[in-house]
Amino acid sequence: MIDLRSDTVTTPTEGMRAAMAAAEVGDDVYGEDPTVRRLEERVAELFGFEAALFTVTGSLANLLAVRALVGVGEEILCESSAHIARAELGAHGAVTGLTMRTWTDPNGYADLDAIEALVAPDLGPFFVATKAVSVENTHNFAGGRVQPVERLEGLQARARRLGIGVHLDGARVWNAHVATGVGLRELGAVADTMGVCLSKGLGAPVGSLMLASADAVAEARVWRKRLGGGWRQAGVLAAGGLYALDHHVERLADDHVHAQLIADAAGVDPATVDTNIVVVRTDDAPGLVAGCREEGVLVSAVGPRVVRMVTHLDVSRSAALRAAEIVAKVH
Ligand SMILES: *Cc1c(COP(=O)(O)O)cnc(C)c1O
Image (tube, rainbow, N blue to C red):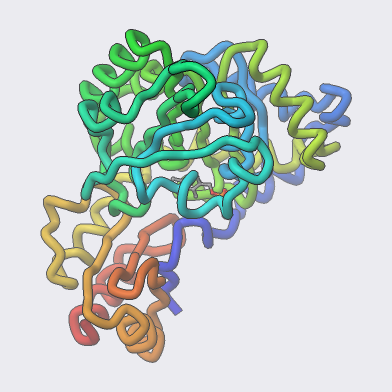
């Protein structure tokens, strides 16, 4: 089976397993796991944040980061197919008690005018106060689109003027970096808080990081524990993440090439495939999923007429070519 359902399905390589087995560890709830600390310091530094917190998932990183900007009864704005709105099972409402309003953009981009039109900061005790805007880079459900960095810089300037915070859901920001050559620090500089995943294209088995100011991270550490997410000798996992940073960032370019091969075969305009995600529109998503499965390719329906195919570390060039052939035949 060639598994294109998600880039989360990768399994650790031999080298990564060896690094994990050799990790120096301690009790991270006591702040005593040296490998976790090394990972947190390194990732904070990479993106130019004061501090970072290692979390079990990207969803938890987003939850803790957004919570730093938006409180109970307040709102965050995001694109209507954003991961925080669609794929975190209502956590931000259920746990933080915030509400969301959305704009829609086919590429998932920040629409600065639409955002400004939605912002309602402190209109008195009659309206929900907008406290932050969230953007995704790359944008998952829009098909791994890379947000133009100038646009995000423009968003940050407007958000400052409007007195609201900016959260960047950078689960796949590594792909944006490799696809465009824009530095990680530049990509992170547009936001007050950020989430990044190690368990997607980077191929670590588990782990994400929440990035913010030192104060916000200290508070997030308390909330992580409160939610049951404090972990002990987590350095075993952090070591996988550190290994991924050393070995699996630049190779994302291969995944992007493989996505182009599959896009071409699926009749998707390759110009709309910026990174490792191919979104195929079809009249019958479940039919396409079933047809591909019969031929040995796993893909996922992310809507009744939308199928997503994702390339990653465990899909070689020959597997991508084979998958492209099968998709062309079935679609
Ligand atoms: C995968 C993903 C996340 C986090 O997902 P988890 O499964 O919770 O790690 C967050 N945002 C985006 C855009 C994602 O694609």
